[in-house]
Length: 362
Image (cartoon, rainbow, N blue to C red):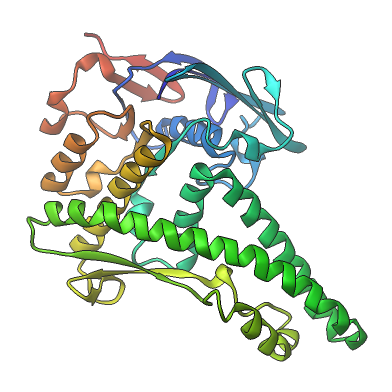
């Protein structure tokens, strides 16, 4: 799959923009705060239904407007598809696929698959568990729409159970309703754990040869899925933790507390890995993610590289660019003087300045 065109109306610092793209590489260069990342954000939003950097829709709407609109024309194996995304300052965003309004944003998942790699991802290894859970969830939601619905329902139930726990501190007679919530929570949580476990297993199969090659056959990488709770003990542990949960007003066990760990030659990279090793692991994760998407959807995803090359050394730069030669790639950078860019046709370069984009002359 690849994106044929993108149009923006009042999105971020773009008043109006209409562009067609190369099916392979598209490089956007310019100084910081000119709008390069905004383009990638618009694509990511149309793929996942959410921004990768903003919690509120109003932040993505041009400062003096009430609404913003994004439209993507996508070429897939079986024909073209059109994605429309509408953002409004005072109401929820809406989406349409091929001109038909979607009742839920989750219905958009699986239409456009993207893999995004940004400088923030390089810190994924040493950041907190929340970021690693987000990495798991964002890819799984794109690959398996049922996972998206399970995850949404799980967090809805979790919120309701936590509200009940707080109420029990003043109304202990409500304790009889707790098993009902627990049963539903265990059912959904178990499905989430099972899906995450299978994903990590498959991801390990993809990243191990990649990382071995990146490091010149010197390092062996293994990802471990650190489940907060195992499937066979989930119900009992949730029941045993009720007293503590009521005291704290919070659910203390479940997949919302899961984590990932990364081991190079049996050493925990989070604790003892060098910065170079942590970046190699992050790169391997993204490339493994690409391979897993290819295998699952029987197509190639669109790759979004947001100013990540400047954070990698020359060896990793070249490896990354060679590895993704068969993908449509949107790459942002501050300059194109580096020798790595000489391998690309100049017609795929675009200069971004204050929300205006100019194609480099051929």
